[in-house]
Length: 233
Ligand code: SF4
Image (cartoon, rainbow, N blue to C red; front, side, top):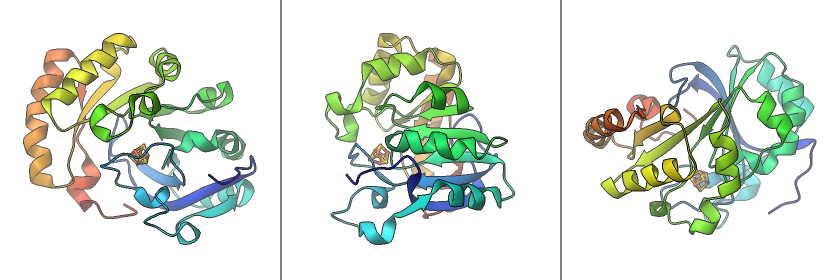
């Protein structure tokens, strides 16, 4: 992993769209996708941010000065900034510096919750969209589940837990995590796995029933319905 600097951010892409998942679905947003990830999920839909055996890092990532980046982000009309990845918390220190320059933006961070954010970042971010990875992701448990991080976020009122569900066993794992880390049910969102509309709807209908039984929320994936798995949408 390259040496990271607190005044520079490794960026994969920037685009404007509407939030496709989670509690603020539909909100016009600027997406700042950061490079690097500490996990290797088999289903990853953004491998170009971290898998440099398959992708050319020099072409995929650009090291940006936080001042220039803040200026570029400010030029967009949307005022909801979604910081995604990759794993944004690998660049937490630089994110604090960036967000100081964007005081009036509403900020969401999407993370797999394997790194502890600083108190400054916890305080500044308006909404945490966390997606802890289950065993089907192909990551070893010691890499994908960090108990102290999950416990901290479970107590944070602005942290939401999105779980991507493919099989019934995934749901059992979610129930176990919710119980083990005392995650409030109303901040759990079940989303169907898949990048084809037909599969999403089939799995989604079943998940709605499961969500109702448990007091969880159901979350569709609007961007898949609108754009499939097209990059930069
Ligand atoms: S945590 Fe996210 S970005 Fe990282 S490998 Fe898994 S799906 Fe991809």
